[in-house]
Amino acid sequence: MDRILYLDCTYGITEQGMLGALLHLGADLAYINRFIKELPFGSFTFERQNVETNGVLAAKAHLHDVPLKEENEQSKASKAADILRLIQSSEIPAHVKERSLLVIKALTEANSRLKGMPVEKSSMNGTWTSQAVHIIGICLGLESLGIKQIYASPILIGAGIQRTEDGMTIIPNPIVYELLKGIPITEVNAVQNLTTPLGAALIQSLAGEVASHNCMTIERSGYGGSDDVGKIPSILRASIVKFNDPIKTNQSKEAEESIFVLEFQVDDMAGEGLGFLMEELFDAGALDVFYTPVYMKKNRPGILVTVLSSLKNTEFCEEVILTETTTLGVRKSVWSRRILERNIVYVDTCYGRLRLKQAIKDGKVLRQIPEYEDVKKAAKDFNVPFHEVYTMALAKSQDEKA
Image 1 (tube, helix red, strand yellow):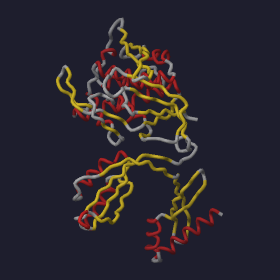
Image 2 (spheres, one colour):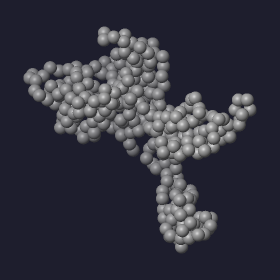
Image 3 (cartoon, one colour):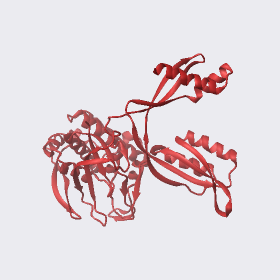
Image 4 (cartoon, helix red, strand yellow):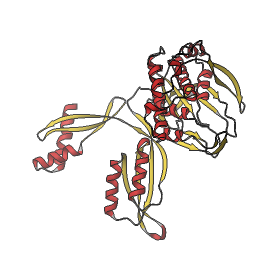
């Protein structure tokens, strides 16, 4: 059975905290350092330090840069493309390499979008090189623990303005917002880098799902600390878990996912506008759209518009709502939904070959329904009532099942 890691990002996520939590869980530091020392763009080692944060014993990973005996062109690599190329040619394990490249690409692409430059020209200065080493170290830690799947809670981020040697900077770093687009976050009024760009990149690249989970059994937990000190404790809890339903354990092809529910009411739109809105929302990637009649202020009859959207398409749906309707705002909440396994089968009828959609649970077909578009086309082509084609398709499916 695949080993699952659950990240509790109630207090955010940083690279120091992530690697520290993995070490606290039992990741092999010697295994990590064996590869980190031999990176083609420098020699590094991690040191584990035990720290106490708000009464919780945690581990923190401190990075040491080992001076090279002699510099070469590879050790002077500064472009993102150079670092990616060197990692691809390195001797680190294949799965570690694959994960590391995913995270680094996400980080560099977000940085390039914000700066308006091509990814290949994105500069990898000393800080970026350090981040690349942290990413590889974290992926080595995941490999050491045998982690196959990663899930995470919604992400906490700080907010405010911070004074630094270079002037005033905003919290969080804009790259954090860029990386966490479509991912559930919680913002707190604290001038702290609770979630760093690298932490956000790890979530965006490696986490299979970001949502609160209640149906899991914790086998063991590890805690990671960081150098950030403030009113919010900078600590990450990572747990090796088993889910108590078959959804996350690959015992079933059922799925559970997080979706956004968008809602708003209007009482001053024409029906034609609402019809057009539905089409635009589906074009923007909405999973479903429906209208409910309601009574609003001053006893005015109105319409409650409800939109279901995947995390990645929510921003597009919001844009359509705010552009195409008279509403001044939209409510948004994160829901989880459980989906049965679905399968398409075909039946041959006197009206041609028709598709049926099956709903399956634990390998058993619960029901099957003829596809509307196939039935409609056949009814028009043969000039027969819709229900006649529909009934025929169902009867044929029962005959084949028998």
